[in-house]
Length: 164
Image 1 (cartoon, rainbow, N blue to C red):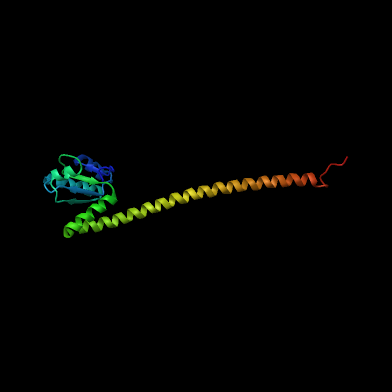
Image 2 (cartoon, rainbow, N blue to C red):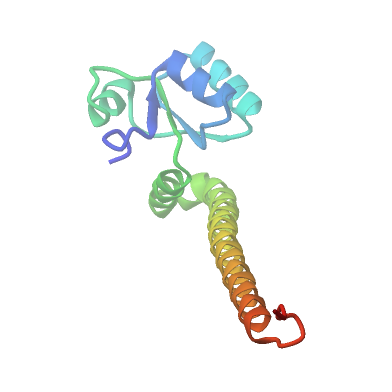
């Protein structure tokens, strides 16, 4: 699902780029990945401040899961997908993945709160703009009514009428 949604960076270069851009939320490493690859993943995770997990699947199985022939590492860039994935891993092997699941649950909660706050802010801006437009319209109507009233009073005021 994450691959179809475009929320995966598959391979070493895309994973590194996603981590450096701080888009990566979770980096998954195949069980049979080389130590040099694991070292690079640690570096990517530190640079991007994201979690990384070594999973039980080998490179071929991980590659088939994302539509490739082989894949040693991939980055999940969506916090919801990452949280769901780690929760499923924790359900299978809680002592290995439970800490990562707890950490991602906190991060996902904060991300949801930030998104909700952003939506509230945008709604306030929209409503504030509408309120401003309504106030300007009411002010213009009030000024037009006052001008009409002043014109009507001028026509009916005997003190200001010209005498012939």
